[in-house]
Image: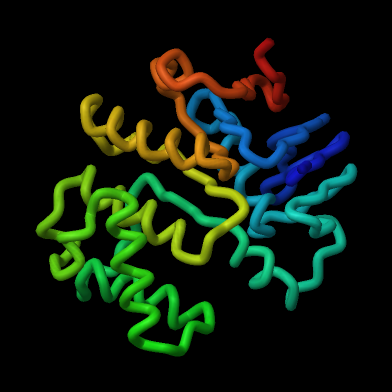
Length: 221
């Protein structure tokens, strides 16, 4: 099933054209690398997926939403179908791992406290953090924090995981563990789109490679 369809899309930041002639199709279960230098437009493209940046020209659909014409009231519903994994974690520092995840569930309309706590526990177990729910983020290693972030992204069973440089702040060994986790999620049938400038990951974890260069995107064959 096709989740993303961009045809001749132009993307701007203010008055500056960042990406042009973007043609992209992504299907359910794809693992897609966005590969390029810092500032090449990888994060900018991702921002259009969840309507944080507008699509100025061309045709663009994401999870059934027409991005050039999406209404403001529709954007929260689009975003609920997306799990985002950030490079810098963005965990709430003043509450435990479990409370970080419960915060997300409450914000997205869950009501039953026991059901929520059971779901959080199951999701933490899925990423190898089942016994760490009581801990504060600052008591966790970088790799453990990123596992919690992945759990947070999985909470509402999204259609797509967007991972923006998810190993950028981690050492190589820890980054490899995070890649195994994300790749396993993809192998189980979920679409993962990951930006990186680490050339090692596509070699070790094969997927589609979209290369960003001079304001354009080309798929490596």
